[in-house]
Image 1 (cartoon, rainbow, N blue to C red):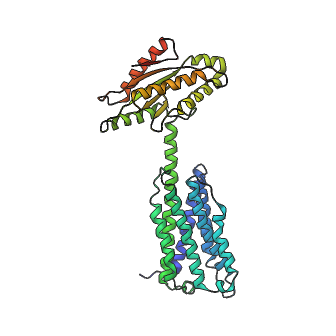
Image 2 (cartoon, rainbow, N blue to C red):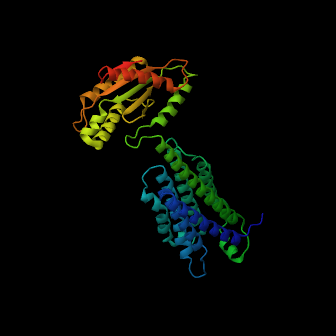
Image 3 (cartoon, one colour):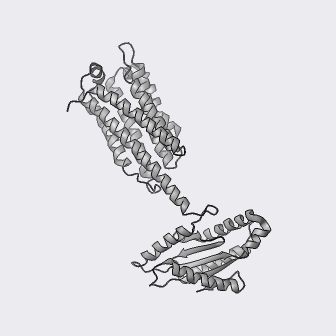
Length: 377
């Protein structure tokens, strides 16, 4: 296939400028997400570096050889930093700038500077190294990421392999041919691959940031803003899901309903700040007794619920531990107790609603019997 290098070069510049603008507007409209901001900066530097690579003259090639490649290598370092930032890890600036600095130092040696083969080998090696680091960054954080990250893995791996293979196929004659408007087989493929990589990577990053934002909104809709535990909606969704799972795997499901005693008096005596502090303190007490698979949520003003798959006796002991710990401790000298109602599931139950009704009846008996106690359904 006959590809005109000059046309591809102009098209690459146009694509990079367009992607920079898209990413910049996404950053402005996306709560200034640092991943988008750094990606926009990376694309801007890539545009500048690509443009500088065309500024060749017969007198000096310092700008296209030294500074252009430094900027492009810096872009790969920034790409790694952007995805490392996305995974929540600290950006290591020495790694970001090590590639451009290695290139600059070696360009000070005439033997390297005047050897096109050595320059192609080093720039390909550094490009592949940065791209593999980016791939490993995503792979390392795959268990923590709750977004669709996997398309970036084969894309980056292919890009790294492409540049590792480049020294074996690049004959180093593109610039003279580009100036004359002729075609160069491998260099045309190099530009074409760079265009596809920039487009795909940009939209993958946009998709991941957008998906994470949507998950954040969903998480916010399922959590109590004061205490940080789940809300009623989250409890019902996860609780019903747990009940459905039990149809195939028989295991116990116990529901514990907590209601802070005399909470109105706490609000009246210590103010709403004291009431809020009491709620947070109670959640901390409960969280210290929970296992990872337990479901705990605030389902009303001072009412909380916990769903656990522990056996009946263990669930009762956990509830008693929480009740006694709260009675023996206080937050900012605010005395607190809690009444507890417990319900135990039956195999034919298919929703959480019946358990809540049973636990609520038991809780009512605990309140009527003097509070600060546990009643079973």
